[in-house]
Length: 82
Figure 1 (spheres, one colour):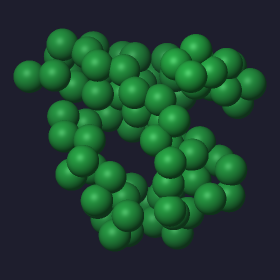
Figure 2 (tube, helix red, strand yellow; figure 1 turned 60 degrees about the vertical axis):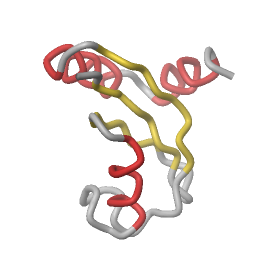
Figure 3 (cartoon, one colour; figure 1 turned 120 degrees about the vertical axis):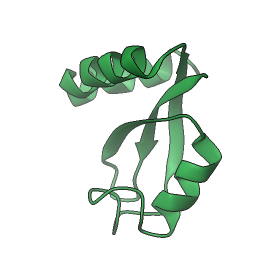
Figure 4 (tube, helix red, strand yellow; figure 1 turned 135 degrees about the vertical axis):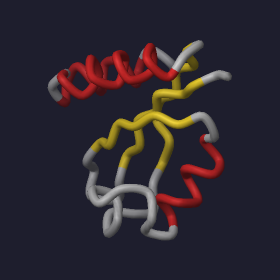
């Protein structure tokens, strides 16, 4: 199963990082306020970055690394895929 690490840009300009094995389902959950407490009132969202990994463990580790980055480093990461 493929796992996806993603970064969302919220309407307030903040960035949210998460993981999922079904990005479409997860985006619907975020859009309806059931995705995460952080995103509940910050929609609509734009997916700014995705990265596919082979296992949930690898995705969790990558998510932790990305979450530890400061905003400028996250923006630099996002710009690598544009």
